[in-house]
Image 1: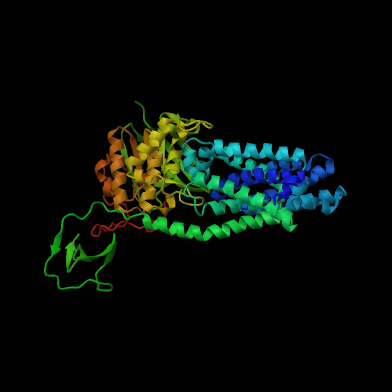
Image 2 (image 1 turned 120 degrees about the horizontal axis):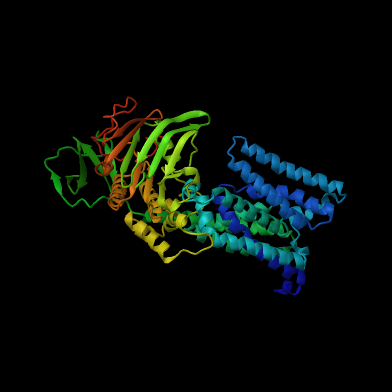
Length: 329
Length: 254
């Protein structure tokens, strides 16, 4: 049954997938909170240039990808925070500049687009021992920083203005999130590939927030969901002989599809459980006497919802139905 | 003791358009000041400039005697924004949001201390939400969310509270809870500056009102209502029906 474990390359692949699946959603939680879900996609595009530089110069493509991704992510953050109206256009220029530049550099190097394919779609089954250790180290650093600075990063992502008035350097923390995103994109490049990397940043978070109530809980469950999807995806690719990138992302999506209805139900129950607050229970019981008029929808009196019943404004005071008579409120 | 807030000939321009002009304002320790004005009179802009969220185009703001550009004693300042993003995006519990109010007094990479946890608990109790600590913020009513914002700021135990329309779009129960909390803070000696559309339940604790009109201070003195300050832009409020104002009716104030 577990015959794939006898294959060293599968053990390496599973290990790399597990740490990637843990680390990427940790950063993804902050990106989703800041409505930057597609930032991972942009960093992925830029990383193509990084990979191409590595292939061209003979340096490790993973290393050059990390460096270029960080530079690109910081540039994106600085353009975004400068708040120019043309910010998203500038981002598009960077994204496609990165992708086109990468393709150009690869052809100059004579490597052909086929070489690039392993980075675009992932090549986790051919990952080396050194790559596994690099992935473990980078993923560990990402997870460590996300957890250690969780209160600060949460505050900055949750309410930037308040964070600023509590003395946090909003720009520093935002740049840090971008750098962490860039590092996790480079790590996930080997697993799911640059074109699908954003999925691993976002989908586990979308899954976890269906049932988690808190930010920290969402982050931890997203990490669990990301790891499970990654490991299950690699195993599936072994049995079904499909590219691991696609099986990982599709399994992550399956997880979301299963939890989404549960999330809707939970949310409804939570909202229903929160009671309506009243200043004080209406203890004084003043019965309006000899009231000939029957209040009801469209009776001509202003209706106000009041807790579990409806009051009607009547000559400047409020009437509430109580048994067969009306109470003064 | 010197002034808590000093604004000297302060001016703010947004996108080249002057919003505040020549504003002078001094708030002394322990004062409770209401900042009134019609929509667009610049009262929200003034508090944002005071807490350092908007740069001045001219003049100076000093907090506790330090120019805002060099101010770094953020634990003393407590800002309560008018609208917040706390209920958007990834779920967050009431406790997590309120704990963010401790960060001015916490150092990075250090876990929360017993003092931090106690301050969060006390702040939740002060606004009457202690039983909601583990609820998801987005499941609370608008008024309760405003009280969460209030608790987050109180958790930092500030000496100066700056609140931007804490009763906008808030049910009467929450308005009274917020006014009660502010009265407690005022008795404890906290300096309070609060932007209001109308005094409402805050009336008993206000010692001084500043009325803004077209980006300038139009009145500064004993408590008064907007109408009494002869603001031509203000429509009289309807006191007959005590129906809580709904969010959106008051409009955004810049």
